[in-house]
Image 1 (cartoon, rainbow, N blue to C red):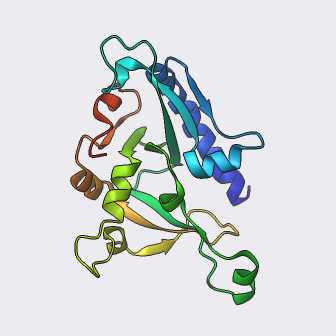
Image 2: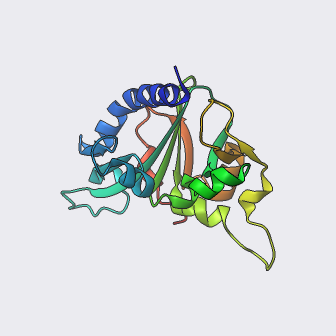
Length: 207
């Protein structure tokens, strides 16, 4: 099994485990963006899932709301819980070979490109789902408190993706979940079992 197939297998298993939870919080109103002519563009811009959040799980919905609100979700799945989230800075860094760079250039990672509302990061072995508001995550990652200060996300070493052998020169930073909880606050970043149904009570957080 190559790297692409291995990654897709892990994603499929995570998707199957999370589907009952998604059914609950959306009343079954969601779309997995994985097929069709527009799938690649939608995944790059809006993530992997488009969901109509049921009003009872949406803190911004009024008491008389009959319909939910559309949200976009970036979904990441890993087989083993590490205590970190891998935030992709380069989908294909591609700086090691002049010819390859001239032909293909470099491609920024999802941390820069995604316009999703939420990041779902699921660990199979621990049945643990981490939820972060994407805008709050970006505001923290790329904050400039003082002139010439580095982005906070650059305080973590950038590393090549080492889980799978693949053609793309994928890089990112491994950020401890505890750091993100501290920096983003409990309301915008929660770690809990995917079978518990209170995750969306305050998902908007600092956005």
